[in-house]
Length: 220
Image 1: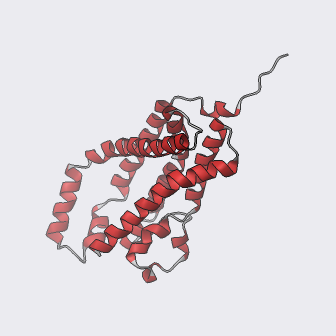
Image 2: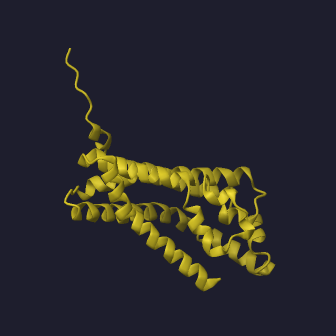
Image 3: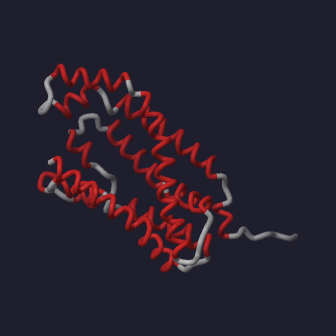
């Protein structure tokens, strides 16, 4: 009996839009759950009680309910934008390194890796649904399996919160999945694949983190 061994790149023999649609549905569902069970009136009163009076908070809650439907549109659009940007960065980096992939294959690499971000969103949503007594500072700083969870948040300057959140095991998994995709579809070794990830996605993330730190400093 003849058997045909599956090729390594068969893992990426899927339709991008099928996976994108599945992710988008899950993001919308998680957004619905967060709107229903996390972003409650009690949440807003707890978050803004030191900065806004009760009337202003009530107006904010009413406005949020009025435009809540937009949050369901934003999730798929943000997912598509994120995939397009990171795929473009990978595509350009591979092109410059003389080992090009099609933009469609770069999209597939990114959408698989983005499953990590979906898992993080799922954990965060479940965490705050199960812990409704969490404080606003918990909501703003909690990031699963990040280095910031091992530190005293009250001793950390605000501008360092976001960078420390990004040092986490899920980010490591994201890098590994990007490198795995490059290795699988180009035949590069792991070392060279990680070099491409560092020179493309890594630099992009560093620029983004520096931008967030700059904005935080400007408004703090």
